[in-house]
Image (cartoon, rainbow, N blue to C red; front, side, top):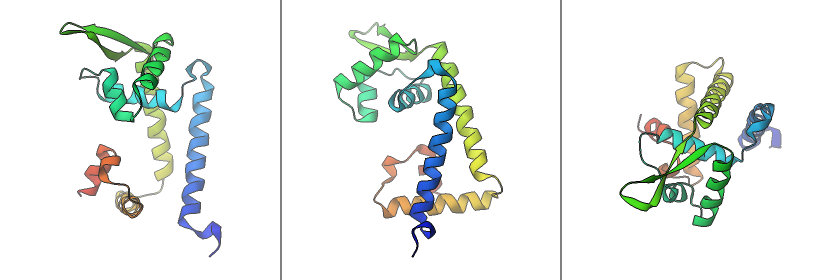
Length: 160
């Protein structure tokens, strides 16, 4: 079997192309030089904006040490992306909230992801997309990726 005719090779090509396109979009806006982890953290904070999120929640979500999370949050605070606000019930705790600037960045990122998803699925019917998700979830399962490692949408898709 030729390498170019394998699923793994095709998936690698798709991954590389998505990464290249998305990184080019991020570089267009020079003042937004964020690490992948900072982007993920912004997304996590946005998804949980109705909750009180503390540094320890970020540590747990991304399996990073206290020092790593603290350093990253300090950098994000200096960049004007987050604020740490003391809470009344415990002077040691500070909840982490997005700034307006970060909210705009997250919204732009969400739009870029939607555009990429549309680009990837152009020409596919809803049934095609459902089958593709089913195949991808099966491949992930075959590779030992459990449901707890997927997104909420992935978990919902598995139950359908």
